[in-house]
Length: 544
Image (cartoon, rainbow, N blue to C red; front, side):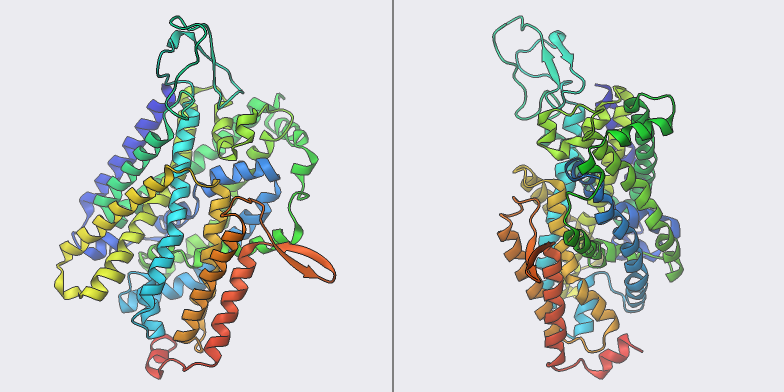
């Protein structure tokens, strides 16, 4: 039970920090949603990086590297390091200036003014919520899977005598060997459904949702930012530590560098190259990181900055931090596919289980608990921002805008946001019980949808010619193409789905995001060119 004890202590620490930060809460809706624009460079860096590093980056990248090889790093990590920082610089600073000057709290408020459209929220709000919920599912699903797999074989239910249970390292997640059962020697062990003798996924996910909900509910943006700073430091430090210890454990050589060499040589040739990844699909993956420019929770974090100068540190350090986190995860996934690691068929069939399987290879319960806490830190540092963001959007863009801000006190505004957050947490947890697609695949589809909306954000900030009709055309086209391609992929059942493009007699495949991005951009530009332009007053407001 050592792993679960360490995980429990970690969750208690995070909960206490979040609740402590709530004591600094100033009692206003601005403080609850934006921390009163008081976040400096270091906390902004930790919040932005922690929010972008999700289960997709840790659990998903390790599993995908196991399946497709180290080319996964180039597909997303390298491009994300550059593209994310560019978005912070090109969009973040400008949108912070508009938000600080005009009092915006959400994306929709900005687009409503910029496009002179009172109804744009009725289109954008359901679209953004529909795209954020799969993002939330990634975290909730992964947290349950990680805790269950790490604790597998340690919580035995039913008629099995715990004294007969021995641990079979390397056969995870069928993680137990049973001796004769004293009560029924010929019988089969009974566990909670799907738990493999560990904490059931449903219970583990519920605990994580409860912890995150508690400190977001009471602490708001300030509690979220403080918790993100702690969790980002934890998962970065523990991730590097795990990489070092695992290399020494699996390599079997006398030095760390020799172990790295041995593990590298053990990786199959097809996993040590990009042979399993189509070149055009590899190139079009670079459009996926543009999603950060339209994430509503990233927009909200941008608005918390104390000054434009607070963006300098995130812009410079974000690519370095991505390398520190992604490189170990991708390499561990590739090692798992090598000859020095014996991965059972049950893990090979479930890439989401590869990272917790590798944690268990250390055979050190206390350290395994710490490393699992690091994984959970990355997951929780995204969930909290997303929950808070949806509560803010509902309150500001739906309730107050359409029913009238004057009808509610500031305290009622805060409670409305909290109520919607509770609803979203419950809804997300309910969806997670159906166990949808793999983390990496679900993440790519979610990010692709946001990437297809990126042209709207960029045009709204830099193109005077953007019109209301062009914006509507772009959003509707993006969603229509997303739905069609998602359906064509068998609702993500085809994890390697690509769109065939005939070029010069040869058919190539591109990522679905390339079609979505191109279609939404063309719709935006073409419709804007033939429809009435914004008023001069609006242009003067945003392009002075």
